[in-house]
Length: 223
Image (tube, rainbow, N blue to C red; front, top):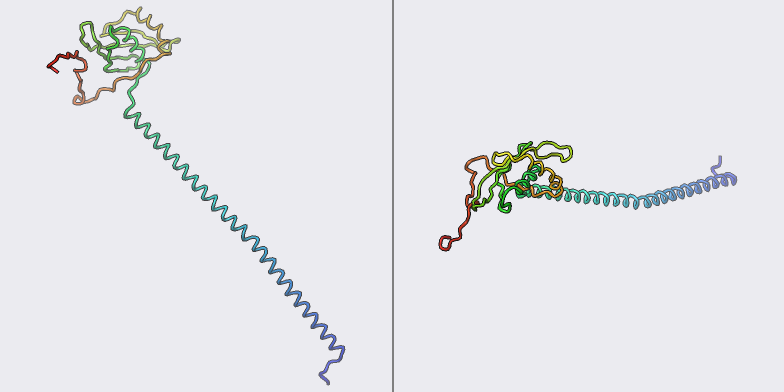
């Protein structure tokens, strides 16, 4: 039996080999094209991912800066509130309500020299107010006295004087009733409601400057 191929067989073998070569070429070409497409897709996605990461980092930084700014603002507001409270607690004068203001106006109209009137202590008992004060009398002497103003509710005025007692002596009710007609004007143009600070509870802290209530003599050679 001969090993040589006939011309027809050789033609068949050559055809098969050519088909295999073409298939391998097509397969390699398809693989190259697939690799190129994958690479192009990867290259197109990488910048998007980088931009997304950068955008996220910028947004996070902006949020951190905004939180820091809010924290600073909150700290400044808290500090300013504390300073205002401390100033009000340490340096703001003591004030009272309109019951003291009305009684004070009545007192200023009653004394002979209102410019020399000095309020010493104010006691508020709710329905009445008691004011201790010093006034300069006709002899040039300061005298410590008190006035007590009792109030009752009023539908028109809100409240009005029921009775007034100076040094425990009750004032004429007609005079008090005449004064009540001026309460609306006092409310519209309120007087100063600043009162002296309360007296200390301990006797050791209670010191009265008596020189402030004495008539000063400026005699040459004595001062």
